[in-house]
Image 1 (cartoon, rainbow, N blue to C red):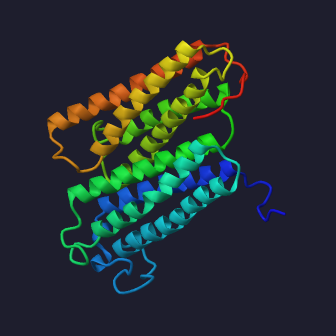
Image 2: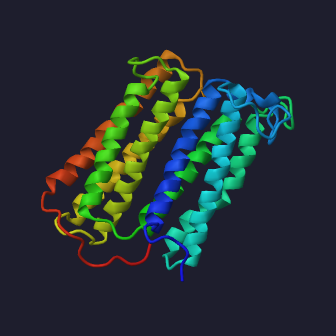
Length: 297
């Protein structure tokens, strides 16, 4: 007899874990942007010689809270992988969840390096370590999204439309906070907002690619394979451009006027391609229920 409550499905658990990872991503950005990553006297895992620092909103607490959220999220990610191996999931779902766990130690290690300027690793708070931290985190987030999508059952025309809509909405919202569009001051809070919305758009694009792939294999009535391939290509192109804006959202390059123009082009391209994918889906107004089952990867 399972001890798991009836309401706790794999899709809900994996989706919650993916959401926790998205928040963790933004917390990490906020922590770095406020300079709190240099708090805790450059110690890890202790914080200013304490296991739990003073519970007041200061750099020590921000850095400590980020670490606690990361620890809880890490255990949840391990749980996602364990669930896929204990349950009857296909190979691709197990692979995505297992890879997320496999690279988790790398993310933890890089995270520890970034906060130990005068500690274990002198000079750890550098552009290269921040870039690695960002890229690995994005990989984990994407793998968890795929595990959630693939392990949660078949897609549907409705889910495909929702995914494309989330992608467009996320990109538009990220533009409001982006450093390339001078609508708001690119403060630590705005940077966190940029990554929350940008990653939501990325999640929508990942889902659009996954569900369009099902349609390519004959999964949805009303969306022919040619249109499904077009949707997949547009969403994949948008995802590539959006990832570029996510990388440029951090101080990984000297943000000159030229880089700002590149950022604007990437953001515009991501939006145009995502809107194109949504338009193709909308134009296929005959989208109906899924047809034949889809097997394999």
